[in-house]
Length: 260
Length: 294
Image (cartoon, rainbow over all chains, first blue to last red; front, side):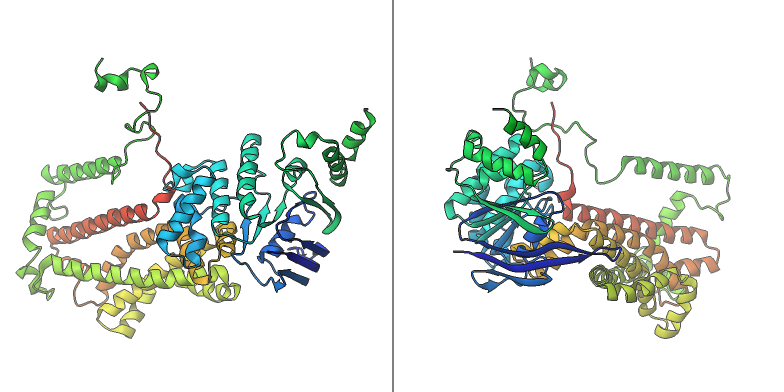
């Protein structure tokens, strides 16, 4: 069980010029346990800031945040974060990266290596455990990052456009890896993306942010496992039209709607 | 077709999964630069030619053989050096005195410089206090500071070690500060969300991530420290390689001056190679993957 609650959360930054910017304004949100929530929105809408708030990496200017009624007061291994940028430590071998969170928590060496090895295998990297990150490709590094977070058995999974920089094929492969791992324990997930198709493929629920506010909140009832065909179902297309309009691509949708 | 001849056969003979063979991209890694050896040999040849053909008198430039001879016969024991109150242990004991000073000062300076450099990268207030101190310490000519150290510490090791620490710490501080400032903040955030506390963050993230740059600073500090140590001994030290050079200079014994300088150069070179190898091993995660080809 891990229910994430945000109540009237605001986050204000001061730019170097002195101007105040409200990145997140008055967001209230409950993410139920085991729910896979995607947050989409145009660039600069506050979605990454929202994720960093829940991760505890930055303090909220005002409002309350909690996981199962325990207030969020800083980063915690129970809220694992997969970063947009490369976060795999280049000075540790793949297996040491994956077992690092367990090491921090005092798990003994044999045990943590065993766990790390099993997660490396599950992300399809059983054969590179002693490799240095420098020897791995971008997609492989993302797999290491995903394995690292899962090996730490977080109750909440936070993902900040984790696959944004990857090519199409690698991205689809990693969606599969992610859904397989998630299927076992069904951690509560908050997944930030700018990719509507990615959100449709992964989420139980899609939240749209604009200007620091939540402007839409939709349940996606598509059956799992989802395929490329699921995205062509009428229900999916209806969701997608609304989502694209939110992203300012209304013209694209009107054209599609005009054709029978 | 013999197996050994495969390398010359070209692509079509290459097996699907190539077994590890000689890397073709880049030269094999040597512990030293072959061009540097060529340069050193050229310098030695020039030196030998200048003295052998009497282009320069032996008093100004003693031949290499005579210098080597002087090192050998005065290395472990030297009544000659003992006459100058430089101990009974010959060149070796004077070298040892200088080496100990350089190494001790470097260790202390690393501890201080890395801690202060990291702290300055993390805390603006500390940086505001430490930066002017460190940057002015680095600009005061040693010629000015050295007499003060002599007054404060007297004719002892402490004066030379303190002078070296002042010099080393400035360099290590600046490199550590820059390394910690430049470290990608994603690594720090990743460490924090994985459950690393402040101590682990410092040792597992900041220190390991900053190591390559800090090592660069340590090598620069070490390279400059040898000459500085010899110089600071001139202002008052019981012994040391700088004192040997000073004593010999007073008597115009160029052969022994060359012997002392050559011995110090060899020590500095060996230290640099050893330190470079150790640092290379500790940061081996940065080496590019090796490409293998047939």
